Every structure is written in C-alpha cells, then in structure tokens.
Length: 144
Image (cartoon, rainbow, N blue to C red; front, side):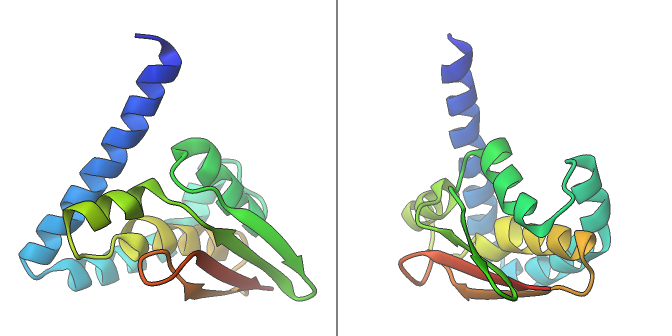
C-alpha cells in the first residue's frame, strides 16, 4: 500500500476510534465527567503540548491541527482584537454523527486546542461560538 493511502487510512481509523470512545463514554453515562476532567488536564498541559509541536502563537494551534490530524480544515479570520478560527468539515464529527448521538467536539478537539492556546498566551480568551455538531460550522473566537 502506498504511503499516502496508509496515512489516509490511519487518519480515518483514528477518528473512528475517538468517535467510538465517545459512544462508550456516553453509553456508560460518564462522557460529561470525563470531558470535564480531560479539559482540566488539557489546560494544565497546554504549554507543554504546544512547545512539543513548535507552536508559538495561538493561530498555529489551528494550523498545526490541520497538518497533523487532517481531520478539520481550520481557516483563520484576523480581527482587531484577535481572530476567529472557522471550520466547515470534520471527519470526527461526521463519524460520530453516524455512530452515536454523543458530541465528540470538546473532549477531543476544542478542549485540547484551548489548552494549547492558553499555553502560548495565558491571558487569551477562548470562546466556542458554534460547533459542527449543533450548527453549520465550528467557530472559535480568540482574544488576546
């Protein structure tokens, strides 16, 4: 199998495993608790994770996510007081919608990115305005 096909297979398999985990967390009634605990961990480890990926600025969190996972295609809209990251398709969200009614967005995507954004700039604000789970796109506003 060609390397490109192997990588594509692994990307889809990874998204599938995450969607399946969310399904089981939800089935067992622990998704909200696990998501909250993981968010605290992400906020504590955000700087370390950002450093390990060579992330120096908040915009790079979204750009690197695209490069590494190839799951969501984030676009950055620069604004006077920061930026808004916008995404209109996500492999994980699409797979989860086929498998379950449990939202994977925060536990596996938005919270880890919040941790890294705050890791590179602890004074920044991170606001999720919309997700593909409930809306037509993901919109995350970063100030600071």
